[in-house]
Length: 216
Image (tube, rainbow, N blue to C red):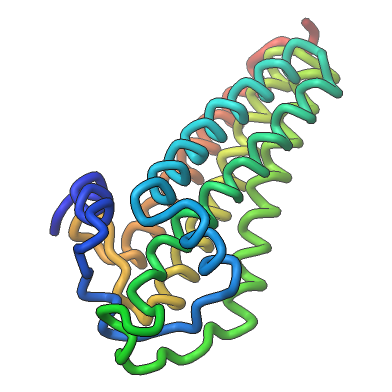
């Protein structure tokens, strides 16, 4: 199983056609056609990956700014990071849909079944859970600031992030007809490891909370 970086490098070659493109075709949305025509097959994926990287830096900066008690600036920077991440993800997904355009290499692939609505609902729940855990942690850090509150916030974030990430991975596997794998492991196994690990780390943090001071 090639690494994620190897697969990304392969896909940056516009002439490369992955096996999944031939297994199931999906309708290409209009935004993908516009992005492909505007930026081209060379610039579009590189801009998308650059935006995703920049988004991660913005989100980290937003958390730091928020922790420094600049609440409004922190929220705005973090929101900008999320919007940048969405824009970069749309660019990358639009580039990957080029195989299904009329006359493209996989344009005659069989049409894949539509993704069930419950899958999108669970994905939305997962994203909300992660953001809620992050918001709770940052609120405890800023509003209280005691070692106990910081540890409790970290523990709650681990629970929310682990649960949300596991659910998101399982639903992504369902959307890909069970063909998603990471490092040779099935998405089901990886999601279970993530969930259990997050619970163990959260339990370790929360068990220490009563032993820590409740004041700054």
